[in-house]
Amino acid sequence: MSVRPIFTKPTLVTEWIDDDQEERDTYWTSLFYDLILVAGVGAISDPFNELMEEGEKNHPENLQSGLLVPISPLILNAIIQFSLLFIQWLYFNEYTSTFEDESLVGHIASFVYLLGLAMSVTGCVGELEEAYTMLAYGIIVSKIGLISMYIGPYLYIEKARSHLTLRCVVALALLCITAISIYLDISFHWFRKIFIVLCILDILSFPMIIFLKDRLRIHIANFTDRYKDLTLIIFGEAIFSITIQEAAPSRKIIENFGGQALTLWLIYSLALNEFNLYPKPDEHALRRSIIFAILWNVTMQVKTIFLLGTSVGIKRAHFLIWESEGNIDIGTKNLLIYGISFTLFSVVFIRSYSFGWGRHPNVHDPPRIKALKYFWWFGLGSVSISPLFVEKFMLLQNYESITSLLVVKCLGILLALLTLLEAIISNLAAAMLGVKLESGGNYLGVESPPSQYNSITVT
Image 1 (cartoon, rainbow, N blue to C red):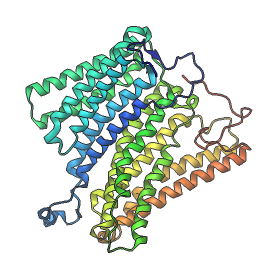
Image 2 (image 1 turned 120 degrees about the vertical axis):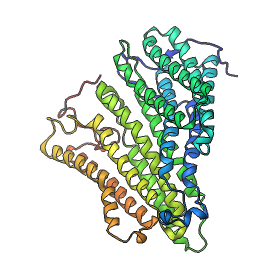
Image 3 (image 1 turned 30 degrees about the vertical axis):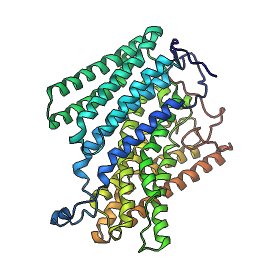
Image 4 (image 1 turned 180 degrees about the vertical axis):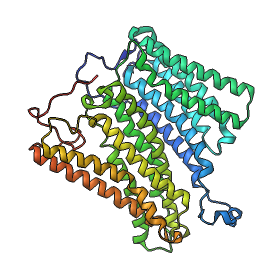
């Protein structure tokens, strides 16, 4: 029988003196946390999937609204809800990638934080106007849990005190703002503004650690792997809906499964590109410089919102393929086109922070390799904005002829071309350099021979 200590001194996961960070698997508490977040993403996306009432369909202004409710009135609330949940996930990810505490006291503090997230998710069920108070209580409990988690490291890790002082001050300030807002019983209109302020202050507090004298080093592989898990969490709700959708009896089996295959392909291909974003820890933007580390974090945070919009758009489009003879409303079309385009555009920036800006290509590259890398950046950038041109092409046609299936087909073909383009360039680069093709080396997927490339010092 295993014995768990009631209390132990927390330790740092990794030190600055460690040149090579040991491989570290995702701990089960993080996976437990993900299960709660899956429920939160489902709760946030549910209002987008509700059917319109018959009276709403009869209004002239809703002729192109299809069967599903309009998207525009729901967007701001969804962004607020998701941002509040994502920030809680981000704090926990930072903590587990920086500190280690396997004691019973540490797990109790983690559970309080987990309870705060669960209460926040409950506050995301249904209309925000009806459940915002529960969301506020969830924020308070999560901040209490976060401060509790920080107590042990603060007491026993001296170099962590400046970092944790900043985190605790921000958490305590936001806790007080939320508690006072509840006590004053302010209206939903003003409470929504409070939520926006909380999100902004929380996000701004993350890069503030660069001004501290003692900066802690996170476990880069563990921290970035959690973003991979987040991608699957966001798309999980869409996958769930696609796979259990009842086949329409009036359609042929090929049409039913064809629509399912195309919508699943959109998710699969986006995940394929998403999981190719992460280089080895020694090449990562988080070690390259402070500026690139901040840019990487901010862009990743913004990209998660685009991923959520894409997931909701895919789910709505898949439903409309089965219903309303495949017609698509303007809101769903925009979610798909702009969500995928801005997601891919974020990918360009995220890769550039680790691989670009003087690294690939660099002055030591042979001319042919340099030309190939320039072509890759140009190709990736072009594909990222190509969904916008698909929209312009569709608008040249009669809007009534644009179906959900057509939009999904066009976007699926573009993502297939992107995947094919990357595979071709990766193999060409490997053949030119005479090296074995290997994932994770750089954005071309190959390791450069040491004789041709100088190592780059990272901070």
